[in-house]
Length: 415
Ligand code: SF4
Ligand code: SF4
Ligand code: SF4
Image (tube, rainbow, N blue to C red; front, side):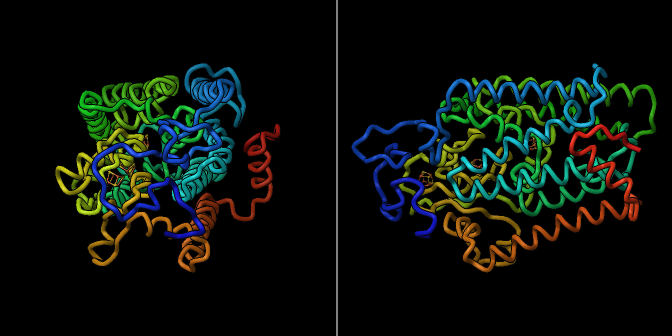
């Protein structure tokens, strides 16, 4: 084990020993102390902490603020404010709460994932399309012209690129690393991330099939987009938009009762699409029955309610459309019995993406980590430069000042 990272739970010290089936403690508390399902906020490790009511209230207010921003831009048209009450309001909230969430996260791999998630949402979903909007190549009739990068809009260039990436690396490339819909739930809904709030058990697992209804609606939307615009296609796309947006925002307020991934689990048409590619593509989680100590921790930490251990024991792998690749089950597994598997395993058969490997990715001492971080920064800088170039605003200092001023909420009118 990497000493610089430290144990996640006391099972670290027993990692290689097989033991009879029992639920093991999930915290750093001494073995004689009765195990808790949910730790105080400042002691949380693999499961989220308990937060006071005022923090939960603040989270619900932030959810309401994001909802109001969308309502103002699409229905109310009451406030002509560039940032505090429009579609980008949600991304501002993600940035603010994201910083808090990153600091609070104790799992080093999850912390790294959150940093990238919040950075991607801030740059790719907010700053580029808002400050330097340009229309990206697309096929069909989209209803609303897509400002690059339109990752969730079928028919756009980035949408097809995302589909290809999901096929090769799994749903995690978008659901784990680059989706604002899950971001706001992970950062603002963090106080509601408690193991006993996530519905588990056979009935909750069967309910996952609900998402195919939304996938069918989505296929209808794709069909409508490839047709010439007419009254029927326009009406259908309006209906589809409503069927996505209303559950999306309303499930914010169900988080205190059913956890913060209910939308991803049951109602997201995009997640259902990516889930299909999860199954048919290269992604799965490998499971090693021989080293597993049957502690059940992997199931407790999975916010998607996947019966990780049971599925692994039955089939020898965790291959499901539900897995959004957060990696928490792998990084918490005390016996390194779980490992990501994707296209890289076809190219490099000796690659083993288990807990040690994932934790190594966040070890700053390793040159690979520094190299990847530099590459990530370079790609983001390149995306910004590309957006700047193709938006045709090179040399337009007034535009830059205008956009930056608007970005800061200053009363400068957009050209
Ligand atoms: S399931 Fe949908 S909302 Fe959730 S992370 Fe994936 S694309 Fe985003
Ligand atoms: S695979 Fe799951 S049940 Fe088995 S040791 Fe790892 S965390 Fe425990
Ligand atoms: S199975 Fe593991 S990687 Fe997949 S969503 Fe659950 S915790 Fe995350």
